[in-house]
Image 1 (cartoon, rainbow, N blue to C red):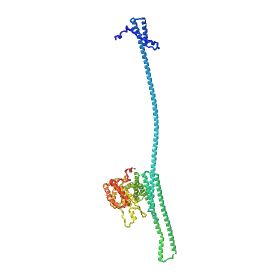
Image 2 (tube, rainbow, N blue to C red):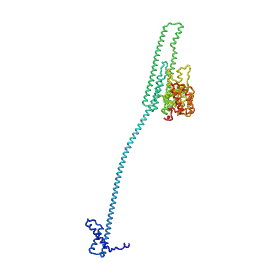
Image 3 (tube, rainbow, N blue to C red):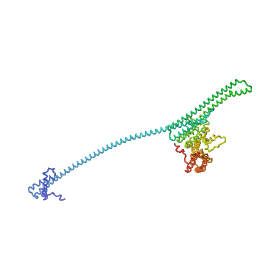
Image 4 (cartoon, rainbow, N blue to C red):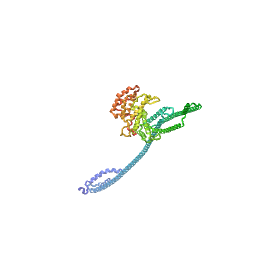
Length: 621
């Protein structure tokens, strides 16, 4: 620190050092002087000044020691100047560096600004491109949404059109179905006008069996057509056209029958007029002969007078005769009016039964309500008229009789042709039977009369009974001394037995379930037991046992269980050989069918549900 604080002093060697420095720097600077002048620096200026200060002394021959002090002053001055120059240079360099730093900062800021501007332009460009892309996507979305909305609208319109077409199709189908029912009703009404046993007083016998048979065929055709269309769905226009042709044929049939009757009446009238003219001629002839004959004896005159009274009655007798005729005519007109009411009642009772089918449970319930309302005394519509059983004193009994007869006829005709029809008919008959017991008694009466095997009962041949009458007692149809074919007879018997077997196991689902069935399964068990206690009939017994067990076997199995299977074994082991013993080779069809049914049921220990039975879901349709 002391050395640093001491005043500056030049060493004795300073001159020598300077000489050495200047001497070495002179050759180095000589070439630079001849070269292109450059910008002077503080260092070069300082060196040249030192040279100027030292060179005179050297030239004058001063020694280093003698010239030490002046040289020191010069060196100090040179150093000071050099220091000042150095400081100026430093300041210049500092200023230059500061300016360069400022320029660098400005350049950097400019670059950053440019980069930011470029980035912003890029971002704006990207944003514009993204916005344009977004707008394009929005436009595409709007276009797709528009196309989709159009498709959806078209699909909705198509769906609405389909629904409208379906609705129209259903309405047309319902309208066609109503048309078919109205045609069926008219056909049945027209068919009831055909009486195969038609007789008119004093008219020659007219055989209307041909018209009756054809009328029944047309009714069966219409019923079968309606049943087929109902199973398939709604009827087509071709079905309506077919039923209308059947209706036209039925109308033509009625017209032909009426023309035949009218022709017979006209013929009878003509014959009566001819007979009356003949009688007048005979009477006139007798009067003329009486006037020309001479007066006889007294006893003879009395006799002749008596014969004359037989020819012409007294005036009082004619008046009495005319009064009886007038009273008879009045009674005839009254009976015609009563008959007209009964005909309307008969239509109201029988036509709904003809319309029973398994199309829907709601339709079956409507038919049941219509029949029940009629039997309950309410007014119902029939053929465009309002009828009621209260319109005639015997109206209710008449409807009971005709309704029971119609149920049995449906079994004889409808069920015989279509076995599945037994169940909807039976459930309605069972429900009506439960509410109106007299109908059930009459159903049994008609059934036993047409099918004595439903009792079961085998009528015995009695002396004095004709063969035709005995065949009718057995259930055969006899027309013009001709007995129906065995196949048709068995078909009708099967239909009635199947209907009976369905009635005893079914109950109306909307009735009173607390009471017992009016004619339940116990009667079916009794029928089966009595059949097995009787000697079999060839072809008949096997057929009816098969029909009865196929329809009612499942219900009897569930009701009687072990006892039922014992009876089935009894049939196979004991009763079947009895049937087989009396069956000829031409009657083996029904026997083999019954045998196969027995073997299958005993093998599987199960009797299947009959085809066409009504499931619970049916009543929700």
